[in-house]
Length: 395
Image 1 (spheres, helix red, strand yellow):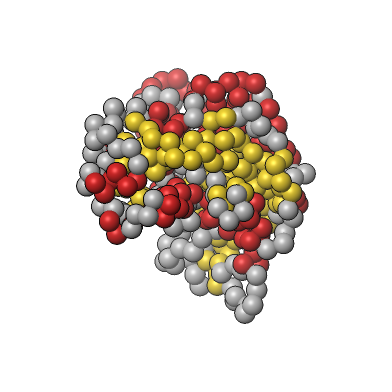
Image 2 (cartoon, one colour; image 1 turned 135 degrees about the vertical axis):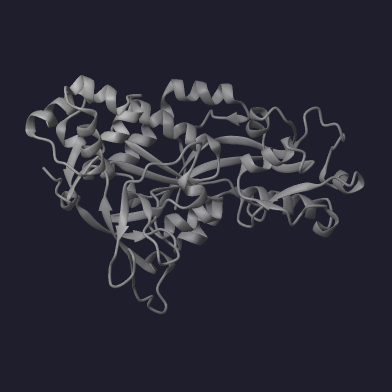
């Protein structure tokens, strides 16, 4: 029987994941290899008996092998960032503040160590391939401004997608906390988006994430994070919950062969630095310390060479591309690099009060007090976590 064009199957992906050839599956299911080939390619629809045999042979439910394309539900979501028109998008999804947010899986966002599975794919709307243009009224606050909406065909269970907490930040510790949360709350998904402190705050204000991580210091007030959160959130109510105090400073080659001692020392030694983008805590620390030591940014070799994460700073130094860069003691230790402390910064999680009662947010926050999580952070080093999980400010 010829397969209905609207019937989809993923027999091949499950079979190959299990290390089975078409002939192996055919032998177990009691059919010919040609039958397996025809079903996988969409040429033939198997009988009920063969369908049940295939499901048993592959160790899964029938509905996990076959589905009607038209059965995939669709939802409307707001794109977290603008993308070029003309192509369909793989996206990850989360519900934030009552609306669905679609995060394009493009470029670095599509990978960590491996490609990130998609939650859905955009479909055509209003003549655009997955994107309908919305007006951007004059004078709207940043949190109300959205330029794109998308229609998304779901590739996962809706209930599962709803149980997602989304965090933007730059500390690698957040990815560790995400893994720990999913270990103790298996039904919870944690989406972690790399963003510097200011970018994370703005994403929170736009309603794209539940939690923003930040480590910014205001020399005028002597406060960490609070003045910046007040300014960006523009009067919206939020709480700041601390992860801890971390050591920030210059990351250098193992053993510090150039004997770098300070930022002014970089000029004397003609050392090359790797910098971070504006809005990052590392960039602000570098600029502040250069001002304190009365060193011109123009005098620092490599000042305009920018990377976008703590890991990239460490990788640049480990590869010999740069002699120094601002990051944290824990990152330096993880890469076996030298470290010269410059500042102790408090890393906080900023959460809008309206999100505090949402179950995914509560489940994530609950693991901050878990002793095994705290033990892992202590072993990591470079953090004082004596106040982890404490509300340090309400704005």
